[in-house]
Amino acid sequence: MSGIAGTYVPRPHFGSRYQTVIPAPLETVWTAWRTMEQPGGEGWGPVVRALFALRGWLGRWKNGRDQASMTENGLRSGFLLLAEDAPREIVRGIVGQWWTMGAANGRPDVTDARAFAAFDEPGYAKATFSMRFTPDPATGGTKVVTETRVLCLDDTARRAMGRYWRLIRPFSGLVRLLMLRRLRQRALG
Image (cartoon, rainbow, N blue to C red; front, top):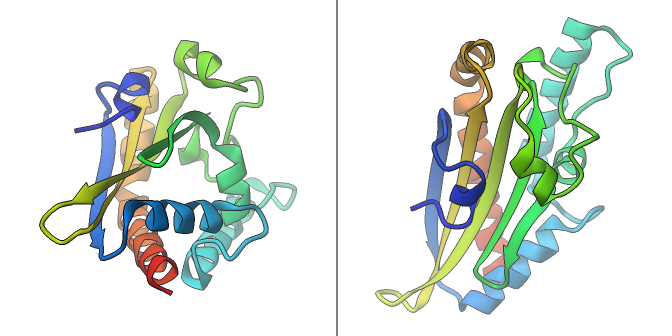
C-alpha cells in the first residue's frame, strides 16, 4: 500500500519499502521523526552523512569541482513537502536527473505539490519519499514504513535511472535502515 505517495507517483518504475515496529506510542514516534527532520538537528546519523558526502564527492569528481555537494540537510531541504497527515504520514517529492551524480538534483521551478504533480518534461524523473506511522495492535507500538517511489518521464530517463538504481539501491536501502534505527533510538531515548 502506497498511502498518499501513490497519488503523486501511482505506478513507479523503481521503488523500495522498509519497515519496523517501534515499541512506543504513535505520537512519541511522530515527534521523534519531526525532531530528526529539523534543519541543523541531529539528522539521520553519522553513517548517513558519510554516504551523502561520498555521493557529493563522486558528483564533483564526475562533473567538475563547481558541483555542489549533496548533503543530508541539502537532500531534506531539496524535497518538497507534498502532503502531511500528522501524525500518520508525510510525503516529500523531488524532480531530477539523479543519474547525473550531482548535475541535476532538483528542479528549482517545481516549488509545490501542484507543480510536482503537473511536471511532465521528458528526460527527468519524479520521486517521492514517504514515512507512514500506524498503531501496531499486536505490540502496542508503532509500525513505521518508509517508501521511495520513482517515476521516469520517458524511456531515456527510465534507462538512465535503471543503471543508477542498480548502483545506488543497496546504499539507499542502507540509508533507510539506518534512519529507522536512529528513529527507534530517538523515540525510545
